[in-house]
Image (cartoon, rainbow, N blue to C red):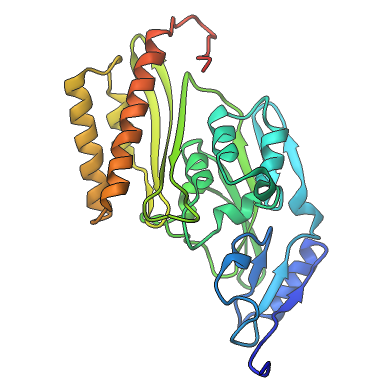
Length: 306
């Protein structure tokens, strides 16, 4: 009865040198990297395994991946730092939109298991944390093997292709995440539905902006459709940067139509419920932006309190 069941082979390197040696010993296979385990353990039929020769490298004992560094310009987190630890450590300095994104992810018990590296490297669905870090222009350190182990920093947007699929060298390790410490005049984040239980109909939107004399001088916006990918481009950023506030009804209709058409072009088919939710999120964001700018005085050094 149990003849066909297989257990994976577990490796637990205690430092990066041991990790490098493990990778070298298994060049012909692609081992699973175990961080918090929230994605691997949720996969159907992963354990007991139906195929043999599965290699898992547990990253939990690598002390370097648990480090946290902060200075006046940025905060840097090792890949094994949990998103709950990021929220606690950075609640006074990190952009509020990032904290909102983290706090909207699952419950506290699950957030204490989800690591920042694991959430960025998930392959089955796209996370809101990844999209928020993209508009905050975060950077990541990748370690990957050629003839020897290489280490290189990338903007986080470069590790995903245009459809939001993870695009990094096979067997690469995302080891650090660097987040700039800066604030914005306006930050907005909203998620609808559950990316875990209903990824086809859930979505999120995130936007950061700076105001200047009744208009937007800088904007970055991203829409996340978990089962499909990210909608992020300079075209959308430029569209929002050209908006004069408060937004009129006619201008709102033009911008909404452009955004919906743009998303349809990238993802040919959007379920009716997801599109309805998308329009609702967009409407709420524009209304919130209008209300915010009407209360904004533009005093030097002032930040919008929401």
